[in-house]
Image (cartoon, rainbow, N blue to C red):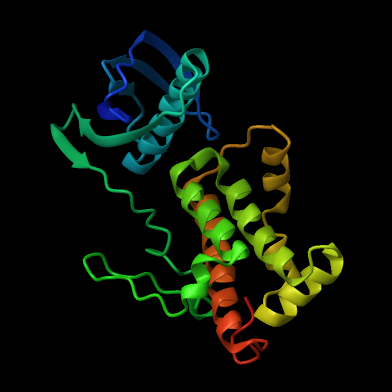
Length: 249
C-alpha cells in the first residue's frame, strides 16, 4: 500500500526546509516500511510504502515519529522551538483520504477495564465546565494534564508521559516520602499496585533514554490507567476523602 501524509511546521511563518531523504523502518512486529520525506517551506510531505497489514492509525504514528525526529533535528540546528502537525493521509493505492484531528481515541475501546473506568470524555462543541477553578492552579493536576496531552502527541513515549502524570499526582500526597505517597495514592483513589506498575518497566526504559516503541493496545492501556488516575484525583480533591465507593482499578 502506498500513502502520502501531509503536514506543516508550526508556526508556519518559520521558513523551514529539509532535503528529501529515503529510508526503511522495521516496526516492532518486524514489518518493514519504506519512507521518503521532505519539508518545503514548512510544508511536510511523507511518502510511505507499507504492507497491507499496517493500519492507517499505525501509519500515522510512524509518520509522527519520523517527522518529529526531523523537526527536532532542524530545531537543534536552527536553535528554534518549533512544533509540527500531521494534517492528513491519502491512500494512493485506493485513492482515499483521511483528515486527522487531534483526538487520541483512547476510550473508543474500554473492554480491558470495563466498568472500572469511571472517566468519560467530553463532547466537542460543548463548552468545558470547570467544576473547581483550583484545578488550574493545582500543580499536580497541571503537570498531570500536561503529560497526558503529550502521551497522545508523542506515540513513542506514551508510557513515559503516562507514568510522569501519575508520579505528579503521587507527589501531591507526600513529596518527601515516595513509598508513603504511593500507598496513600492507591488507598485514596482505590487503585491496585499491579495496575500502577503494569507499564512501569517500559516507562523507566524510556525515561533513561532507551527507545521502546509501543503498539496501539499497549499505548491505550497506559493512557486509560493514567486518565483514570487523574480523573479520580480530581474527585478526591472535591471530596477531600478516599474514594471508597469507586471500583478498584
